[in-house]
Image 1 (tube, rainbow, N blue to C red):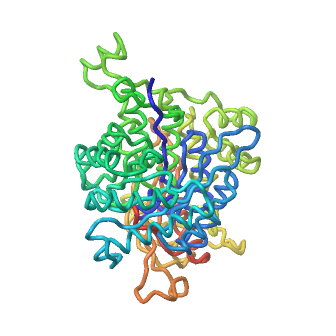
Image 2 (cartoon, rainbow, N blue to C red; image 1 turned 180 degrees about the horizontal axis):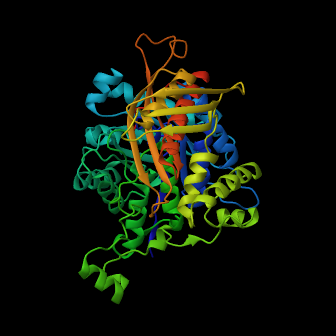
Image 3 (cartoon, helix red, strand yellow; image 1 turned 135 degrees about the vertical axis):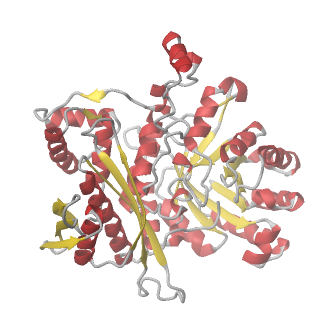
Length: 536
């Protein structure tokens, strides 16, 4: 009989620390609901002390996603905290209303981190960790502790530190490979030695947290499982600081596909993986690589003649998983411009969206517009519409009209009409090096937000000349001094924007406006930061 591995998702905390991946509170809520449908065991919803917005987002997730209603599934909701009372107070304030709250406390444990970052000696680190874990335990009985950079810590010190926090009330011990330094064999051995040499370890769940700096995040995570870890900390699409984290979908499907080898299983509803992956991609602006394991568009594609022949005879010849196991669908939605709102509502529920009446009304209008221009509409087209038009929250500036003139004769010109925050319609025409450059210049004239376009990515959602196109942009802006008055150094904010339309210039304009609206929202709410805790 296989043992269960707890899936601890940190997309909303560690994943969001990836530069440009910051999400609005509403986007975090949508992902949190999706993670609950996926049936992850623990959602690390954020780092509450980082900003008032982060605290509010974690609190809302705890209140809505972390509470069971009418028998619905409610995961553990976790907030991260450094070994400081104000951090722990904020974390508890954020998660306390969840059915199953957790506080996750961390402190650096490697010699280089203790010396240069904390400026504390090992004895001081142990004393601080013991005191703060006990403080957290006074609020909450489910306490996770992480010795940051554990893979580069001295083993004997690590055992002593872990014993101290176990005595103070820690129930889960996470062993982070913070900089992705460990090889799978080293990391597996570290987990095994901790089990063998730490007094009281039998009272706790051991957890992995691997980064992908050397491309071994998933491998080290699985090695940890093989040596006794029964919780894995992962993110959707493997997003995270630097090269990212171990990928949830890859770890989960490895355990599912090779359950007979690992003797382990998870409770994840894998048929939702593809949709949650696409949602996170749309919200963060990070496209999914075609060759990405499990959820990339080529993951179940076969071009080689030999492979195709084998697939026709028996799919198991070249597919170790079925596309439907991870929620990849090939069917098209049989709806057209004469289809009704009820049919659209039913289909959205079938593919996992719980839209409000207002959101459904807006989607129906956008669906009708698309149906007039596109013969067949796929589920992926609908998902693109939801991400581009329905979940663009806090749209201070909205596109009301766009006209482009371009080609080999004359100068590329764009006329843009926007609805401004006060309801006024403003129209500006600009000339550029191309239609998108001209459109962006016109938008800048209206919005007046200093920024620099850092990345621009475009691709088709589906096949065909009438395909919906997706545009993702990453935009950098300087944070006004009044947002961080205590900072001596000028701060910058890097945000992503997403847009979809079967007119690719319209999609590009929507993506740019999405990013600018995020910058405005961050500055107005005093959240001009793009990161959080260094733990990872």
